Length: 501
Image (tube, helix red, strand yellow):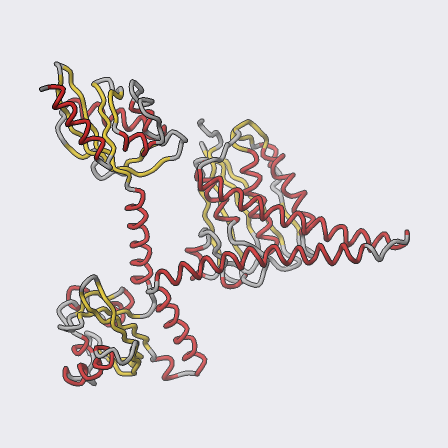
């Protein structure tokens, strides 16, 4: 009978897509199912007898020990972690989010715990995507209203609309569009919706006025289309406050129309993703094509300068070729860095070094890029500072910030490096007098491939700061900035003086 029950358990455990892990009271693994092996990347029987911590990322080991102590005192069936996020560690070192349920039981006088493990990577990704689109919806500067196609009752309204109309969300959910459109009664508004309901038109556009909670009115342009929310038919209204358009120029009217197009794109998720892919491919093509054309041109011209007295011209083109090859090499290194960061394959090399060595090497290389009248100011006490960190990553960080400062600053300006030592951290600042970062772009500046609006005509891939941020966070550091358009930027890096391996 026992063997029969054991066979039934084995059949059921192997049939489950979730991972099953059974550990004894010493937290040693006594059994797993096939789903667990596949989930964590191990072969059959490879995990048996191993400590459970093998499947837990090292940085969570201490927390897990404390959790186990608490669970052992009062072990009952429950979900592990509470509100905390849990992660598993694959055989290859890669971590992934999991959900874990714990079930204590006894067998042959011994206590065991069975953990039901679910890989929630896709769920987390879906949640993040939903949050992303919810943020776009809520933070739109224009007004977005969603209401039921049958009852006309409002279902959702973004923050921009609530701020302008003056109602709370709870108040708006009790209203319909007719309640805020004094120029329409219910019959007139239903008539306006008929072309959409009868599928005669995909979108209708009209101008009217909206009435705020305080009784004031403002002119609006309504872009209305029929959509679906699950099985529910809804209307999506994108509302443009055209007060300024009514009062000023056609240029403002075009600006408002562009914002409408941007909002429409924000509601079409798949189209935006395809455009992002196209943008990336175009960016890479452009960034490679421009320097390659320069190299080819200089190579052709070199063949024409064969006389001794033409050495100066030859040197000029050789310098151009060298500069372009260096630029291409940097781009390739950036893409390799992204791949390593994404796959967790970065191998850091920690050692003791003096800060002046790093700064002097960066400044030496950057001097060749300086524009007319530009110079780099180095603090006099730079020799006083020592670190135990990854020297190459710090060099990469400072080099990236210095090169950006040179690129985006005009001639006859100063780029300053400042260093400050605190109890446990070293603070580095790179200060420039350049064009600065537009306020609306500042929240995206560390996003991969993002480039601020005022530098789109300059060479660059938009991945340098993203790479720097990724490395610094891996080393326990941070990066932030202060910037004002046309006045310059200050980038501030904070890094532990000693990295504890």
